[in-house]
Length: 367
Ligand SMILES: *Cc1c(COP(=O)(O)O)cnc(C)c1O
Image (tube, rainbow, N blue to C red; front, side, top):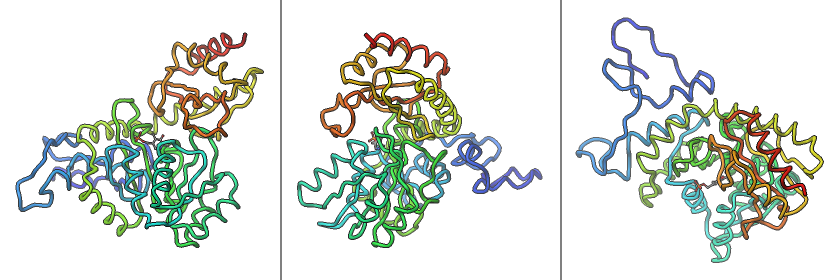
């Protein structure tokens, strides 16, 4: 938005100096000129006429760039978009040299842990799993690491890591710190400001926000690292779909609104759940729209997940529809996650409707 129509309008605001909701609403748009659309169009192109900067569809697309400008602006760095969160994970793990050490949370997104396990099995790298809440243990584990992989809050245990302390330890060891910021979103946590080198998102979740696309993104502070990653994306061809990038940008516009609503409802549900004697534990870090309930058995948690009428029994999270699932229904979920743990993703519905449905489902499983 750097050009006005020449009719004496004042200079447009410098969006880099505005606040989160303003940046989400306004970054990544074409210049405001007469007859220009407000939004970056969906550019469907595999090739561009030669002689310019774009050349070929694997290297550049104006719709991706609009999304990347907006998300980069929210996280405070430069962004690259990928076809899924796990595609971005694979690209980042490929930065690790042969046989080098990666520190990672013992509770984390299963797909990330699976990739790490597979790479370790093939001798590509060594994985050191840590309890992210034990900062001293994480710091000690960083000693000879090349990459420190963090999630905070963790999936689905909802643990929080001391990111500034871990960033300092990683840097002392000459390692890079990656933070998977999917759960918190840049609205609530900006890891680059806390010392991280790389932020990763499953855009599929809160940023997309409408359960209708798969996409991933990486945001880095360092220009050189951005160039390395861009060259790899050009070379690997792990580029996002154009329609997905457009939808994800449309979702990003309302990210602060949705996250604030989900967080307010999650906080209210946590307060009410604390009063119930059939809930063994409520795990909530105090912020965000994700929480976990621990019931006293797996079968009881199964009954609840099958009894809700408004909450949708489904995996995934961060959509505007509230969802829940018992995580140990997945065989590869670590055994340190309780059998009776239900992960809840709070959407934007009315909190009293969400509460009423949760109460009837919990009551029906009381027996
Ligand atoms: C979903 C998710 C991923 C993987 O993203 P996809 O877009 O599904 O490939 C990575 N990390 C976290 C925390 C996630 O929730």
